[in-house]
Image 1 (cartoon, each protein chain N blue to C red):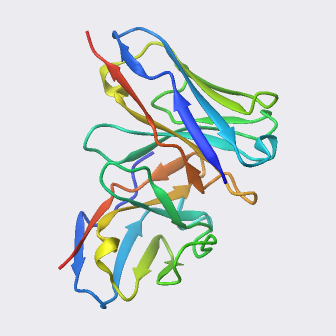
Image 2 (cartoon, rainbow over the protein chains, first blue to last red):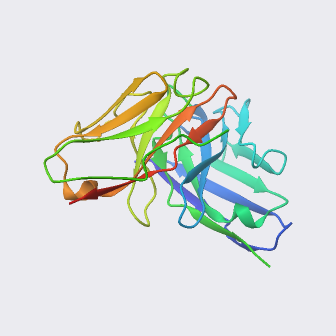
Length: 120
Length: 110
């Protein structure tokens, strides 16, 4: 059974940094692209970033490019999102998601999410 | 990248069929066969229903089907059930090598 468990969320001041982690199990982690998708309170889904299975390719939304960095440790089956220069508009539940084998442009399993609140 | 356009809400009675549209452009929906659909119940994580326009993952009911014509993709739910009441989101791969979501559609089962 695929399991994705996010951690690292919390309250941070504007301009601050936070690193989210996503521990994966139940599948061959290194074989699949992984993504971060966020959802602001009461709002819709927003794609944040994707990283390929071998970490050779990364993709970012314009809203986070230059501030957020996605990475993975395939030896630890863990996905990361380093968030710097946080802004109030980054407040959201951040979901970790796995892609199907055939495409990174979809998410076939999702974690339960980790809440990040940016506020002074 | 602008969000894909979905109706804010749709409704239907149990047993009926409904269709949710998702309109993009020739830089995303119209250019690639990489449209996905997700269902989200309140307080829960999203769940994939369809990817690659019309591929249904194992475990997803065949009451859910996807299609695409030009710049508009569609999700059809047949035999509407009470538990289908949820928010639905489409997404598409884009020319910029990014993903874009629709604003979401709230489905009410009357």
